[in-house]
Every structure is written in structure tokens, then in C-alpha cells.
Image 1: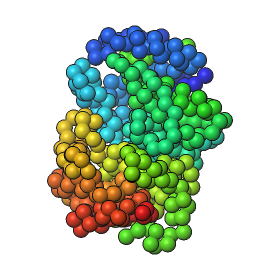
Image 2: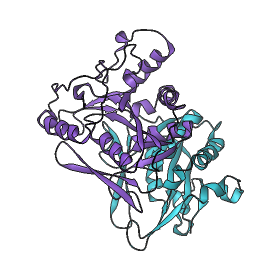
Image 3: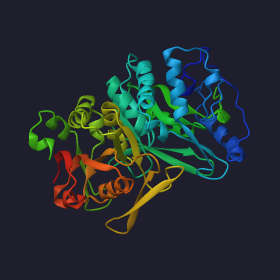
Image 4: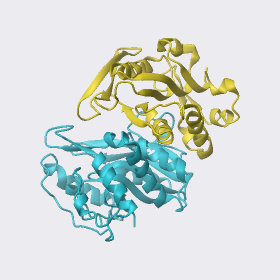
Amino acid sequence: MMQAISLLNFSKPSPLFVAPFQRRHCPSIAGAAAPISHLHRNRCQSYRISVPPLSCSGTVQQQEMASDDGQDSRISRISSAIRAIPDFPKPGILFQDITTLLLDTKAFRDTIDLFVERYKDKNISVVAGIEARGFIFGPPIALAIGAKFVPMRKPHKLPGEVISEEYALEYGTDVMEMHVGAVESGERALVVDDLIATGGTLCAAIRLLERVGVQVVECACVIELPELQINLL
Amino acid sequence: MSAYKDKDPRINGIKTTIRVVPDFPKPGIMFQDITPLFLEPKAFKDSVDIFIERYQGKNISVVAGIEARGFIFGPSIALAIGAKFVPLRKPKKLPGEVISEEYILEYGRDCLEMHVGAVEPGERALVVDDLIATGGTLCAAMNLLERVGAEVVECACVIELPDLKGRERLNGKPLYVLVEAH
């Protein structure tokens, strides 16, 4: 079973649990949520994304932090460094913008440290980062744990031989590519992106890696969107 | 300036990872593909370490990385030297208020954007990308930073294509590269 871990729920003392799919009010995607999740379940039936209960809407929820230990204070600062931009990229979407996190040197450092602490002794040899914001978080983690960094890209960006995986968007489909030969069968991998929404992009990344015999140990994101909690059992 | 010329012993391990892919993105172009460097943890770390050694202690508070391969190098450098990381992106990728700089391509134009408020006047900045060819993209990046009053200390790339004379296009701004490719 593969889990997705998001940092903003990292410090909760209760273990992560599987939540049933909730189609909360999210006007920008409500109409398409059903087909996306349906396709999602079909393609990722063997995986479970564990979803913590904390609602994250980009605002600071410091009062919900249970304790004052060092890890909680790191999470709180990371959370407050992220800003929500309304109506981007289109009306109705509240966009979680991590670029402000990158301007807070301590919070950015803490973000990477939290992931590195989690993954450094797990014999992970591959960190796959999803273009483009996964390129910001993935390489520092890879360098710190001694793993390769493998970029997962939009079509026609990677030169040379690639394998491709199509995945569903709200309307239509997109394609993700990985270099042939970047990873070897039997390697253990982490997939990194800034945010998980429907999980479609992460699922495509997982499939690409598994097609070449890699074991995806975990997906790691900074942010998880609460309205899109998904149980893919 | 280049580490290659400085004969840093780590450079050969970096240089040998770069592969040339012919006819990409279009016929006639010999594309310098840096992705195999990321598959060699020691060589990748060496490349980042060389930049860190050069820029730590220089009071640089901003590392601006050019989408998308500049995102792979820039953040690690920024984290190590205690600077902010500022992504410079293609149009409509950055949410919220941005400033834009248009620049010339071989055919047509493109545009680079930076967030308003990411950088303050007087800050000292580094611009990072994987490769400098004609220098058009780096120029646009420098212009964005200078328009908001930052001082661009240097541009840093892994690869330079000296035959395309990008260095001369940087208006006297220093350029530091690890390897040259012809």
C-alpha cells in the first residue's frame, strides 16, 4: 500500500486515516469531480491515499496545533508562509501558492528538513519530481538523501527516448513523460510535488515508475487540498 | 569565468554526465541534455557544491532560477547560502501580481515573469539556469531583477555554448559556468 504524505498535516498526533471521498463545495471542479475520481479509482485501485482530518485552506490554523514541540512550530511557520490566491488560474479556484514559502528561508529549509528526516534511512534511490514545482522541492531532498533526481515532465520537454503516461484533467487529458533508463527495476522511489489536488498527476507519475519496475514507497507533497480527500481503496 | 578553466577536479565527473541529443528540439540542434547529471548523486552534489562555495559569504539574498531547469539547481544553492529562491516563469504560471519582461527568440518572442514583491530594492541576486546559449533568457531575467532595484551579482550556469556568444549579451554582468560545450 502506498501512502501520500502532506507536510501540513505532518504534525498531527493522531495517525493518518483513510477518509471516504467527499465532494465538498468546490465550484470550479464540482462538475468534473466524479469522472476524475472514477477514472482515478480505475487506474489506481491498488493504492490508498491516506488523508488526515485537518482542513487546509491556506490559512494558518495555529489554534489546532496540539503541542508546542519543535516539529509543530516548523509546520505552523510553513503553513503561514503559503498564500492563497483567489480565482487563479480561473474563477472559483483558490490557488495555494508556495512561492511565498520559498521567500522565507527558514520555512523553506524546514520544509526540506522535514522530508529529509522522514526519508533518509529508507533506502530510497530515486526522487521523482513533477514539473515544475516538484523540481523545486525534489532535488534538495534527493541531494540530502543521496538519491537520483528524475524529472517527470510535460510532453516534448525531455530529449531522447521517453515513456509517456496519459492522465485525466478536469476537461480532457494530459501526458507525463519520463526518460527511458533513468530508473532501474527494483529501485525504491519517492514522488514529490508541491500539492496534491485530485491526485491525477501523482497517479500518472506512479504508473510511469511502476511500468519500469520501480517500487513507489511514498508520495510527498507540501500541501493537500481538503475538498479533494480521496479514498482509492 | 568557468570552473572548467580553473581545473576543479570535480568538473570532469560533471562534464561526462552531460549527453548530447541530436536534432532536438528540432533538426540541426545538438541539445545539451543535463538530466543524466541528476542521476549521479555525487556529480550532482559536486555541481551544486561548486556554486555554493563560490556564492556563500557574498551577501547574496536572492537566487532567481529560470523555469524549469533553473528550478533544479537554484533552490539547493539558495538553501545553502541562506537566500530566498525566486522562480522566474513563463507567462501565466505565477499567480497574483507579476512583472513581465519580453525577450527575442530565434523566431518570435517570449516572456519571463517574476512576482511583484518577491525581491526588494538593494538586494543582491544570483541568476541560475542550466545552460546559457544566446543569453536572451538570462538577459530578461536580469532585467526583471534590475527593474525592481536588485543588483545582479552574477549569472551562474552549468553549461555555456560559447559559440553563441551569450556571455557578450549580458551587458557586462559576470557569468560563471562549470563546463563549455561546442
